[in-house]
Length: 344
Image 1 (cartoon, one colour):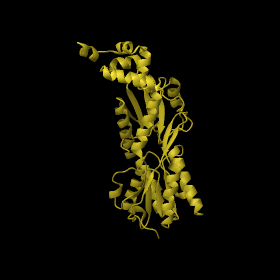
Image 2 (cartoon, rainbow, N blue to C red):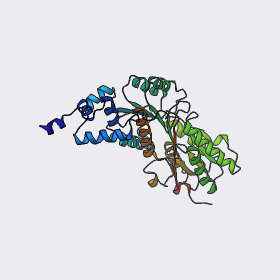
Image 3 (tube, helix red, strand yellow):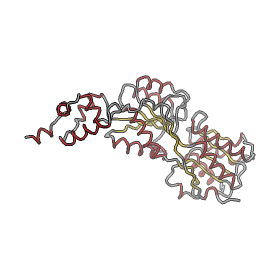
Image 4 (cartoon, rainbow, N blue to C red):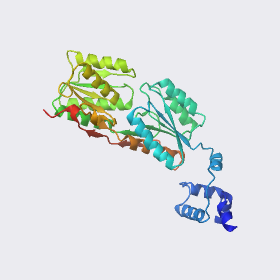
């Protein structure tokens, strides 16, 4: 009979045994920073000894938590974002949370619509990576005012007061350019995806500063602004590679532009790396088996997703009040393959 009582013990009974308030016991079991380490240890030990198990349904009702987080991304088919989602899910599952994935398909209006959909408390927190079109972030300010925890990753809103997890975009672009320049390249084209995204601008700055360090003047006709239209991008790349002042190397800001460059080179019978070298930011798993294998600047996508989720849960649990200015920068890795050839 005693054993049965322990099995069905609820929070009220546990608090009575401990001679503590229900609120104190609840906070201790949820690892709240408001409760001392000694009290937490005492509560957890007694709960374990009495075989106490929280009722998740009742707990959700009391806390009004959905036990769900949202991840808003441009596209799940992108290798970087699929890996980042895996990282976020692995962390969330450890907290008994579900993850909802929302795709904007690089469209600002879809991003705004998703934020409006989530405004009414459908989730406990949100991870976001911006679209290429995002030049106004007022919809995120609305979420902040509502008190919904918000974390940006990779493509971040610089002016929003929220934690940001990024990679060393400027430094890794500079390193990638140093590699190209050491192979003898002097007319390097830069393929960007947006003039508003933080990642595109920082990578561009690293690109430009590397040229300046080698006393090479950037050329406007080698700066290619691409968008979300695949066919239009291919036409632009084709024009770039057939113009009089054509490049001897391509620095692609994202992997889709590198793949498009490969396809155009194949169409025009341009040899990689003999005629043009190619380097790209990419988490493409097949980069090593492309013909030729693609030199990449590879981001720690899984770790970015997991880190973003860990910070989001700290916000959800309100363990640390001053997280809004936290800016975590993880390092990317240059992986040299045959698409950039050998040093001349």
